[in-house]
Image (cartoon, rainbow, N blue to C red; front, side, top):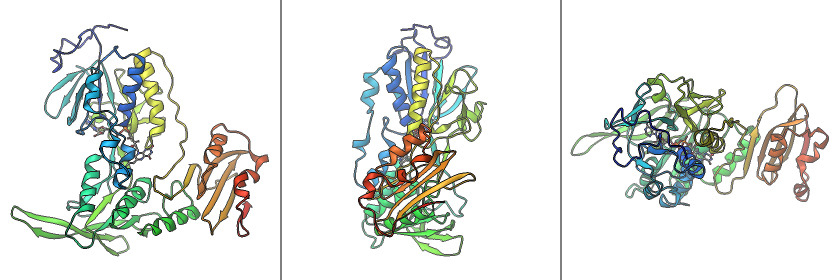
Length: 447
Ligand SMILES: Cc1cc2nc3c(=O)[nH]c(=O)nc-3n(C[C@H](O)[C@H](O)[C@H](O)COP(=O)(O)OP(=O)(O)OC[C@H]3O[C@@H](n4cnc5c(N)ncnc54)[C@H](O)[C@@H]3O)c2cc1C
């Protein structure tokens, strides 16, 4: 254990100073999301006593499994069941935990962070893990009641409260965005009995992960779950009615007008068009940023005492929206902070999966053929099974599977390890287990 005297400990009054062992360096983490939850585990596993840790989180909860908010919305999980670190956990590990606290400013010179409450906290090492927020859309008239994001527990509770509202005979919702989040939100609402229309600006769903054939297959399965679609258009404006109650006039959502002029009636809209990294603290502290907060291979920002990780950071021009690479970042950062070991973070492709009951899809790497690549496809229209493998320079560069994803991880390993597969094609595409169910109309084509 290192007992480095804190250079800042006596410069400013830390509100925890009475309980803090002043000899330990002060490690302060801004944001208490999934990245912080995992980082704390990695730190405690390595050196539980090296730092006096303070975690400052805007939300009123300990760290929880944000991924499972989709399951909460679909009624398959409860808020309680997705909690990973209740407040007692922080106490047990002698971590100062400030929930419901927003950090508004970082002073790099004095090594202090300031909260919205004006409280100031000293640090020796600072970690920014502020995640992302819902991306904004350019539609008009957004100051209407009934428009929600789908990012955290508070959003999920508001959406659920609408879905469970009594008294209104028809409940209609618009979900904006046909990516993973939008589809999971649409499914969660539809299963609660809400009439859902999903608006997506591309011509097919999950257009970053699926091609047109598999995107259309997904649409037909989602349509069986009573979701309607308005594809190829955007929301131009939100429409409202004005209702007066005792205190004020309320603008309530009545629907949306699309860019093609079509009106869709709805009392609620969920915006799920993508994410924007929360980098504002870095901007005002003069820490280098681009789309997100820039970090080197060791998760260090342009200030040597400040690190960043998770969805708020940018590494080698990549930003992050899935937890798999973030776990690697946590290990890299914990190794540096705890053991002074420089283990570079390496970003690797991650397969896409959708958490909607009855939908099997798997996608990784390229979706469309590019110059010099070969595309092998297999389609069973009746069984709604589709396989596509893109091969470039003899190696797999893209996988799209729909309906039967059992070989997904095997293909993914071949892609990840860059194994030469051209002599295995097209047999590799068919796969042993699939041959037994093959039907006449299936076609194996190599283009
Ligand atoms: C509904 C949903 C489903 C998802 N499903 C999947 C999935 O299936 N697979 C997958 O890999 N990923 C999924 N994700 C993405 C995954 O949840 C994120 O990649 C992950 O949570 C990112 O972790 P993070 O710690 O960087 O950010 P977050 O978990 O968002 O945590 C950031 C925290 O910082 C807080 N914060 C922000 N600014 C401040 C401030 N100034 N002061 C104090 N606190 C602040 C925020 O309130 C938040 O609590 C899903 C996300 C959502 C919303």
